[in-house]
Length: 281
Ligand code: 13P
Image 1 (cartoon, rainbow, N blue to C red):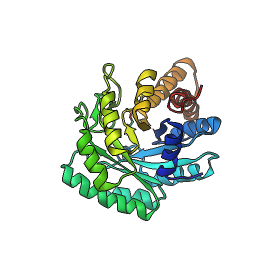
Image 2 (tube, protein in one colour):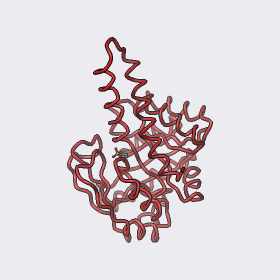
Image 3 (spheres, protein in one colour):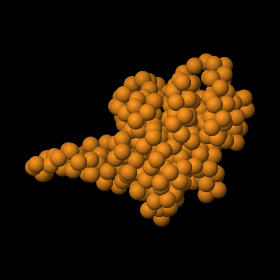
Image 4 (cartoon, rainbow, N blue to C red):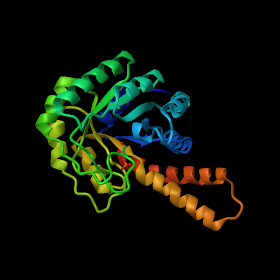
């Protein structure tokens, strides 16, 4: 069933866990995630990032995501990830998305607040939830998001507090050491910062660049206040490895064989993440 961001976040708060938010720029990703969600009977978020517009247009994948969410036997939130323009956010809301992220993190504080306030009004009109970002998330060399090699700017807890008070967002993406894409080296996360931001904002926090971390890092981050983990790169890489293996091993395969192998690999990878995020033993 289709639900909004507030509903899945209240599940996370109640269960002191994090909701997995998985980027789904194709049907294979959607299938992998929803199969796991139904197996474990958990609420999930499927997300489309504006930066994936050239991979898959919002107008094509958006209605598919909404339909799959409606048909699912578990609560599914359909989210716009890193919406950088208000027009794009409006388009997602019109398509039935139940959550949107406005990313004005590269703008001045004042402009970020101003645009986020507009995005909040837009989301509320549709009964959707809203996430925004303060501080800049870094991007590794092999990232489809942000500017490649970009260094992050850690979120200042005081500024985050002011931002949340002025915008009243449902969730806040904060920067504390994770990066989008493949980690070139093991990241060192600033857990104290997560705790301080959580104390001041009293708002569910979002971890971007959420794939590729250790079990301990996830568990500590969740204990400090992370309630949504954005996950994509490492799951997608597993699909590529599975496809490569199949191509090398078997003659005469067709594209649908590769797609099936990709679903299986992404399902297995996201299942491991889900068990940690939702504390499933
Ligand atoms: P990764 O691609 O690093 O897994 O992060 C996903 C993300 O943060 C989407 O916003």
